[in-house]
Length: 282
Image 1 (tube, rainbow, N blue to C red):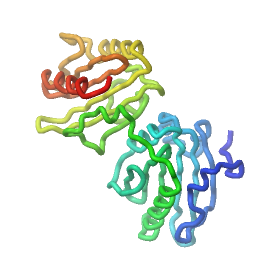
Image 2: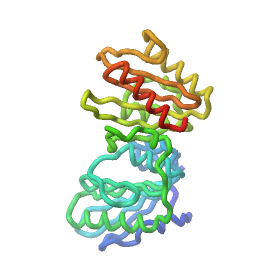
Image 3: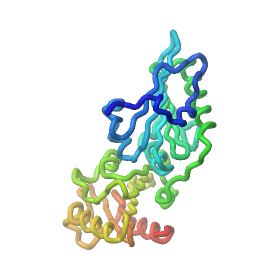
Image 4: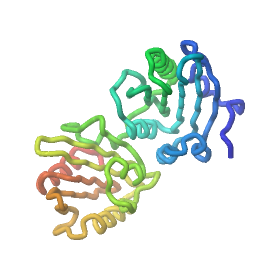
């Protein structure tokens, strides 16, 4: 299946400007989960991991200036728009959309169910100005607002590194940010909802992983699988001291699994999980 041409008609093209500071469209293409690898051969699987629906890709040209690539992703839900943005959250924050960042000619943001990536093949003063103008126009054209996934709000805010908060579904993305195991020992799939937070305390750094499964049975199977694979030598259920002297603990509640990695002490590990239970709506 080849990439669809814009002639097949999608009103979302109207979200992208037809001209910007003299840059004009050279080529438009639409991709879906089956054709994404024709365009993003190396990273197409990442977008599929966040359940994207359509990609609207427009290339702008202006004589004597670098090309500008505008990628508008319809992610289907605001959760996955936030998720794909959080996956590559790098650079410095800018005030566009619901969250945005910019680094070296790459400007990305999310708003509603959309993720937008704008890239200048060479960063110049003119191309940077054009990128931000495109972003502002697209932001204005998107007339919907999204919400940060509820599970992300369950991450305690104290000592949380907000630049490293992630939302995702499957173990491929989990391992990208925090390696757990080659095998999918947590039983993650495209229906699970996961939030990962990095915390920096005076005593050290730890990671907190929250997972919501489709139901209690799925969560219980995941807990058993994780305990058997990750903490087979645990002296008591759900907690183990790892080779680096730190502690990993897991707690199962209904359809929800919370795991703390690299806690400084056994007591601190349980304290963190206790606070999750008390302050959440599990």
